[in-house]
Length: 288
Image (cartoon, rainbow, N blue to C red):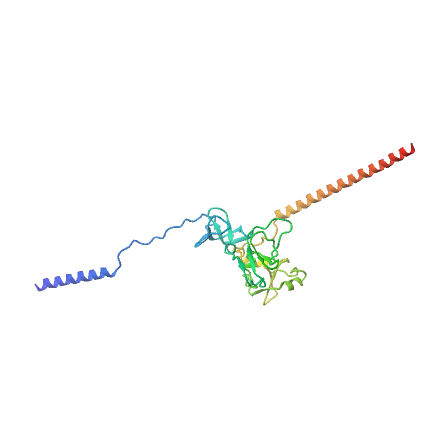
């Protein structure tokens, strides 16, 4: 009897411990499986940044933020870009990240702190006299910031620049030179040799605070629009086709100019001959 009771007690103890152990764990649930979001197929399998999607006023479809190293032209400002961007998954519409998130107004910007700047999205009318950016001196073709009190204007990519920048290829900080200092140096920064492109050109210029290194604002934009990080350079240099087209256009212009000049000379000769014939005819009539 004693052995039977001990067995019963042990079995009760085991059952009790088993019940208490089972009650200490939560009830079994099926594992959570996240829903798969449809991705768009691109040539280089871009990195889709989940959760970053916008609805932009310039396009009827939603735009997703992706990171792709290829070169593209922004549909907003009409300038080049690479890397992060907003793109449409239904068509070939692409925007710079800073163009897609551009504010309506800017106050106290380091490159034009005197007045307020307003964002304009209407495309610039094509013509001979195109407006140029007061920072990089390149033509403005699309989105831009325009001062409400003076003619100052700049690209959205130039809006991303500051009065002091760190460029990846230079170890020191670069500070933006005043426009008056640039104008006094051989006419609007033409005397500064850029350490990035090795050229002299118009536009604002950064100068190193520790050495005699200069950097064009248009070259500094390469670190803003993703071109520098993705190894894209030399877009400002004209290609062989462009040079050939310019030479061909010059030949055509010279040919047309020579043709018009020849026609003018022949017409002049005809007029002189007619005048001479008229004089001879009038003399004969007078003698008769």
